[in-house]
Image 1 (spheres, one colour):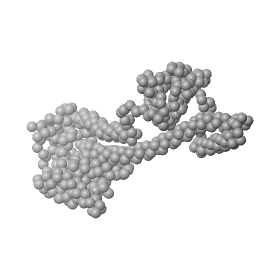
Image 2 (cartoon, one colour):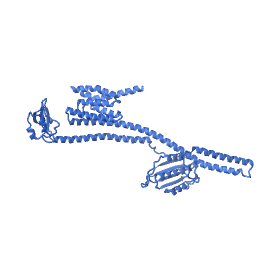
Image 3 (tube, one colour):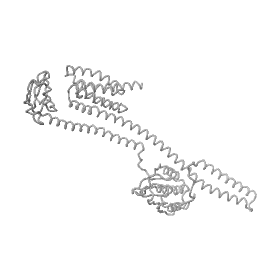
Image 4 (cartoon, one colour):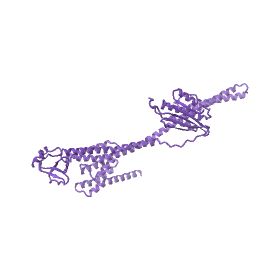
Amino acid sequence: MIQWIRRSGAARSALVLWLAACAPVLLKATSAGGRELWVLLAGFPLLAAAAALGRTRPLVGLAVAVGLSLSLSVELFTSSYWAALALWGYLAGRWTAGARPALWFIAAVAVVDALAARLTGAGVWAWFTALTTLLLLVVLPWLLGRYRRQYEHLVRAGWELADRMEREQRAVADRARLRERSRIAGDMHDSLGHDLALIALRAAALQVDPELSDRHRAAAAELREAAATATGQLRDIIGVLRTGDDPAPTAPADEGVGALVDRARAAGLAVELEDGGADRPGGAGLPPMADRAVYRVVQEALTNAAKHAPGSAVRVRLVRDPAAGEITVWVANGPRPADSGAPEPVSGGNGLVGLDERVRLAGGVLAHGPSPDGGFEVAARLPLAPGVALVAERAAAPSSTSARELARARQRVRRRLVESITVPLAVAAGLAVLWGGFHFYTQYHSVLDRTTYDSLQLGEPRADVESRMPPYTMDGAPDGVAAPPPGWDCAYYGVRRYDGRSAYRLCFADGRLVGKDVVTSR
């Protein structure tokens, strides 16, 4: 069923193409006669065969249209087949994979037309007209079809690339979240391991207390063993969760924001801290998860500032709002100095992804992005009470990577499409300037001296006459001049420069001069 639908659709497209190409032919055939009528009648089945080939052989259809046009005029432009040239020129660009076959075909048409103009004696102007027709009716539609093909290919490739990139980004973000969760587990191990160690120590003290009975000392021994076993199991579980590339902790587990800032300042980072006593671990009344999240926000922001904007000033602000039940941590750095000398490092964004996961698990909300002064800022809101989750402020959803890639692809294709139109127009303008210059040049060198004209005698051999003529002749007789007698081959020369109203007419028959006169337009 699907194949039948596709075939019927292709047949309808071929029929529409054939009717569009044959409409000018039908109009011309109603008033044509002789050889022209036979060429027009032959065009109907030939164009039908070209339309049937359709997408598979578009260059064959273009060759048919070019051949029919050349059979009517060496100048290639005809009122009958201009539509066929434009249609198959577009289809050749639309359905041909490579550009080389079409370019070779266009070059071959130009060469064949030059030979035809030479053999028929049509002259250089006929070939120039054929080149102009080839440019406007074949090359320009071919470029439009080709860039249409490239546009669709680029959009399809862009969507595939965007889909793959987003899947990879989701996988990277998932790995970053899992790593941050393992770090959170490590922090909990440090905290719980400390508490379990204290429990085991107190149980050991009770175990050797002489004031307790044997039953109580045995219970204390069991408690100490249970705490030690729990500590070992916790260490084993956290060891499984840790990834192989997790760095070993270099700061104490109970280090606060103040100590972290002091260490960064001692390392050479220009950092300023504004806090209200909220940087002491546990001292601000924060839940353990929120307390470590505050520390990690400041730590990640200072790391990014040192990496991406070395030498810029950093401000850290901690603001606690008991009325709202939240604490806000804000870290901002200035723009990267222009004279830093270090290359801009590439960032994968995984640190912020993991940081967002940690803040979210603590019930908070994280925001980050460029600051108005050209720097970067990171802000997080975390609850003061455990078990509370803050609501994120509604913000405009960022555009997806695929949408941005598609927009850029469309912009590139539009730019290339404009180029595909302007370049042929520029070439046509150049040909027009060349034609005008050549026209003035030939008119200047087609003037026959009056003395030479008077010296010509009827009956002179043609070779002798042409040896004394200017290098060029006029394009034709002035307007309204009657045609010469049948069998006479006439040439026209200018009387005055750039005056096309009068001309010297020299006519030859059987290789001799048989007529000379001055003709004037009526």
